[in-house]
Length: 600
Image 1: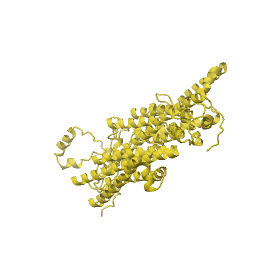
Image 2 (image 1 turned 90 degrees about the vertical axis):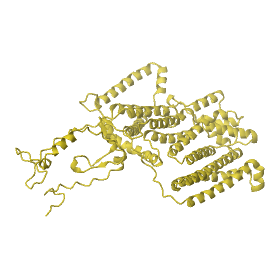
Image 3 (image 1 turned 30 degrees about the vertical axis):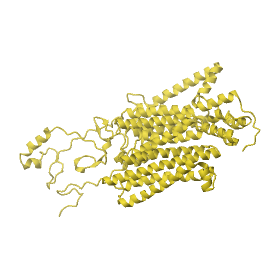
Image 4 (image 1 turned 60 degrees about the horizontal axis):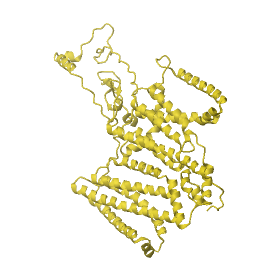
């Protein structure tokens, strides 16, 4: 009676256990093969110290840019320095085996017993030439392929699952395809440059709301510069990976710390060096400060807050920034494989099912565009005669609807690209015509919305919200241009990255416009024509608006500048800001007096 599988009794080998399927991390992100380099850890520590020391958390300033440059240097070090390969242990030679009492292979021969002849040798002499021929062949180089790990039988002595991205050759980690190419490096450098440009806005502009938008965009561009990602799923996964990278980077960094007894300095000696350095600087700094008042003032301006709450906050910031940079270094040491993530193609529909709704939608857009051209050339008189509304009310009532129309049109075009078939030449031409026409007509809708917003601002004044919404409309116009190009080429793999790049360009353009000053100038020009001005709103703008508000006659000038001057802080070198410096210069020449006007 045959023995049951897995018992190892009889002529049957043990049944290998069923390997578990590899997880997402094993398939796409196996991680570095060795511990972190001390150079990378040192660069991360320096960048975290700089970031925690120079960033002004309550306002935009130079310290944000210095911290971003220090972080970029640390991450650049992690990208160029290869991680140390993991230590490998030589396999022990297998013990000689001999047939057991029942003739089952795998039984261990007793000591001193002669080696049993192998079944191959017993089969005949031709096996020896074949074995010699196999041994004389040159070794075939291993081919590194991304994707799921290859499972092999347990009897071969190899692991059940080997992640392809962690395969090493000669101690060097094999990079994922596309991660080290010239185009991939150029795209990542472009995202890094965009990050520095966005953070650098805080050095030029004093508007806090604008700097918050730039910081949020900088988080997205930093993620793409570190993680990568081309498709929409890849970019979404890239946003979710940094928290997981921070958690996985802590043990990776701990393995890379120098130990006692190694050639380099240990952790204890390094901490002792830091303590001695801090003590020397503290003692001699206090002595020099007490000896010279000018040096004391200079030192006070250079150093941040050294009180107990300030030190506790500084330590917390060091740990927070250091953990984030460690996560970025971990991602750069072994980038995840995100290029294979893509939206699965949907089930195609028949030509009539998508072409008829899209063609009728094009006709509806064309009719609306004809009406907009009539309004554009007819002017406000045509609107008053046909709709019975004022021109400003007409503009205000339609802008938000047109903004929603622009966003929904992008969804419609995305659905066409997903479900419309492109097998024949006629289908491809039809897609180009209908989608291209819809994109072109949508540009006219965007232009109409912008024109309505301009009329609305002329009637009721410019505000931050109206300026931001107009910027969003300009960004949507750029998207329709890109969609039209993708429709003509019938390829849009580059579109997700350019959509985000267009948003970054629009935000940097808004920062270059100096929005608070632009709003003040528009409202002052409107006041000179209509003698209507909301001084209360203008007094809530940032210091960027001070040069424009200085044009107002008294007492409006003092009413608009009084609150801004009262909230203007004293900046240290880490909080240097061009907008606030210019505002101080203007207020220094002519200070704001008392406000005799009621707030309205």
